[in-house]
Length: 74
Image 1: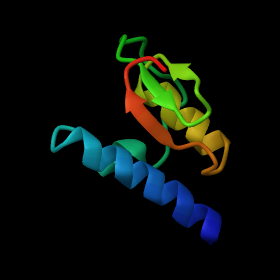
Image 2 (image 1 turned 90 degrees about the vertical axis):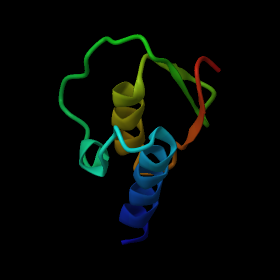
Image 3 (image 1 turned 120 degrees about the vertical axis):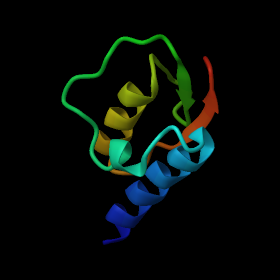
Image 4 (image 1 turned 60 degrees about the vertical axis):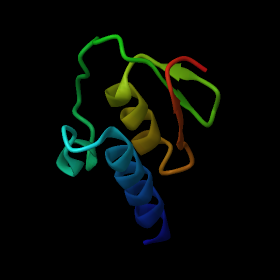
């Protein structure tokens, strides 16, 4: 349950940062395929992800140990 809570908090945090045009539903479970739109984000692992979708997939796979750091490249 703690792990689920951590992942949920990361996803809610991302949703809050992005404002009303991004829905929480988009980040509950990432899609199996991400688009290649170039809007890079930086994770706490200091890795630049191509966009929020790729970041969320990585965060989901790392079970909450990865957090959002900033918009843009690291």
